[in-house]
Structures are given as C-alpha cells and as structure tokens.
Image (cartoon, one colour):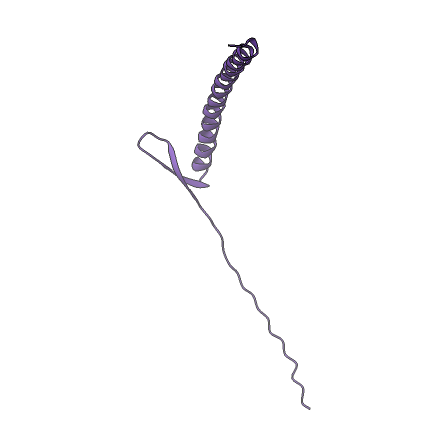
Length: 88
C-alpha cells in the first residue's frame, strides 16, 4: 500500500472520529434543551389551564396530547334604515 493511500485512510479515520465526537456532544446538548423546553411548555400550558384560557387533554402519564382553546364572544347588531322617497 502506498504512503499516500495510508495518509488518506488515516485522515479519513481521524475526520470520522472528530465528527462522531461533535455529533455526540451536539445531540446531548439538543436533548438537554428539548427537556428544558418541554418543561417550560408544560408550565405555561398548566398556567393557561388554571386561568381558564384553554383545556388541556393529557394521557395517562400526564403528557399533553391536545389543547382545546376556549372562545368567548358576543354579537350585537344595530341597523337604522332611512329612506327619502322621491316622485318623478
């Protein structure tokens, strides 16, 4: 095997190892952020549920599986019709 080929193989292995290390570190960081965001989301939804803004559907483990938004409103209609008849 030529020395150039050996260098290319060694470089490929080193690059793969460094890439794998960064992949593992990044995925760990993403999992940590995901857990933090899920916790914040749960806190916000619980507060909105207590305030009566939404109904939250949860599964047996307490995980949110759906949200029902409560809407309140009213309709008021006022109409005035004014006519000026003319004769031609």
